[in-house]
Length: 303
Image (cartoon, rainbow, N blue to C red; front, side):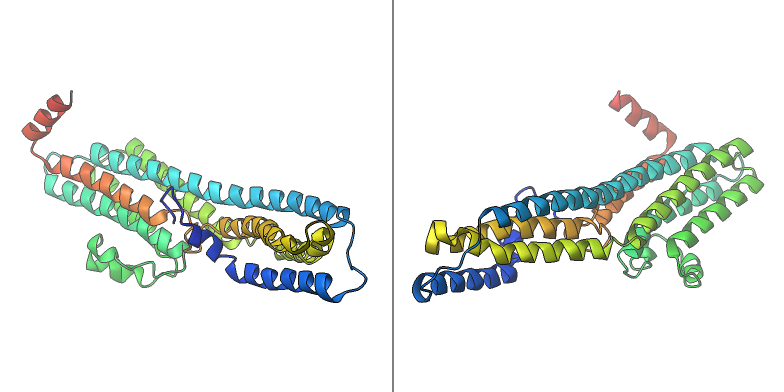
């Protein structure tokens, strides 16, 4: 995703450079023919393309709003994933305990929290139609990776592994029934967030609506030179190109925003979000692994 505030002009106009080149040739041809070869000028009232342009502006505005709503919903979902991932790690670290099997409890904590890091990366890669297990070897054991190979939906398999470990922790007495229910609720929220992302991914923006707007836009651009040629002459060429660029860029913006999981620069920054989650969870794990005296000293230092 584009994370810089200053977007290069070349990147912006690079999306419509071919269309603008065609429009430049088209409008220049009309200006040359109109000014040099025609005895009787050919033009149309300016009100005709003006009315059509107003209608297209309303349609493009509606489409841009709908596309942004899809993008913003995706960003809100991943914001909830950040919160629930931190909540899950906090619950695992503070709920689980055992007086006699501290090493096993610590291994359980590490395994479940590392698996949550893997889940965040895997979900982002799955939504982008990439290999969902790529790079997960640094978080998961070989046994867990082999288990994932049997599933088509890797994030679902990871949540299932979390639930199995949670059940084992309850059976071993590492946590009580109420704590198990709270952690399971967090896993349920993560599963809901995954389903919402998949709904956005699999719900296609109405193609007929996009097609009709595009055809109307082409009609408007083709009529525009005939509406301004009597007023501007050869100056209609840069004017038509500038107006067309504005409409085309708005259309391109809507097209890119409507699919926030397509591995494009306008995507929801899932990899960056997953990386931030990993940093937070690793820091929580590191603090938990510190000796009790060091944790107490660090706490006093912060205060």
